[in-house]
Image 1 (tube, helix red, strand yellow):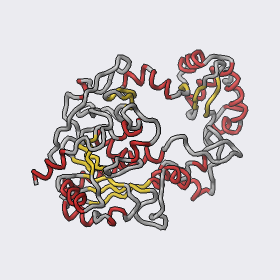
Image 2 (cartoon, helix red, strand yellow):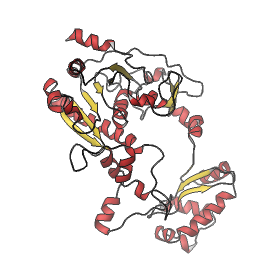
Image 3 (cartoon, one colour):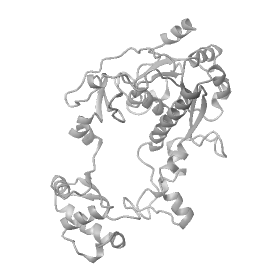
Image 4 (tube, helix red, strand yellow):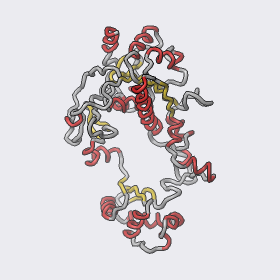
Length: 403
């Protein structure tokens, strides 16, 4: 692996309501797991940058290579006071930023100099985009035989749809998610956030690390093909097998599932909601006891509860509507029923559990999500939020001097 230059670390003062805020000494006591791994992030919009961000969170030195005008993600959605979007603050965190015009001979040359010392390259141009720049995998692996080239696209590098443009919306449609989302008889619903981008980012980070493990053992780099549509199909779980073997298609039915009851969201007297599932016999029996339904033959088994799901949902809804959310939650938790409040983002930000775990933290002056996972020996660390365009442009000069 290439040496890991130390980035300039910005201040990460913790907030009183975020006990595990970035800068916590517990997050800096051990070497990060990916220290020494150098990643070039030339991706945008947004699964590729997410993959690189997860690697950066656990110690990889991620160098964001963006066009001279800045990555378009800097201008998506709500803008922070410094002019960059909050989206960029999150997806660009822990990354050092350089600017290159890869359409120019000089930019192309300087980029290949960076490739010489890289372990992973992340890109998400439409298939063929790197090749048109003269930077296809054949050229990159000639320069750096150990390189892992993570290619993230809408539909993959092969297949009839490979050349089509693909954002999360398209993947959530063609990948089956929208088809089962929505109320019975209603129109298919897309998720209100780009789930395909987030899931493909996780898949890309995982796949890149699998390939890096091989490169470390053998010295052989390779191309990793991850796409949004395939990732959404993976999220369907058993539904593909159920259709292929039983001819059964899951239908849109709100929050209900076709194989367990009760399961859904339930309104309380104060206008707040519960999310509840009783998919195991043990949980169901405890819920039925709380509702005064022990021994009711309509709900004696999982099959009975499913056959009489409307009756059970009506009883549970009436029970919840007679109580405020806090009281309902307390009674259900005392009975050891699987339940949670339905939260807004505001609830998440102020929740003491999420604060205690660092699920919500502060990086620099930006509140955002914390680390994805806690590693006991090599914890990740959030050093800085997304930086300005070309904030680390001197890296290109240093790289030239070290050649």
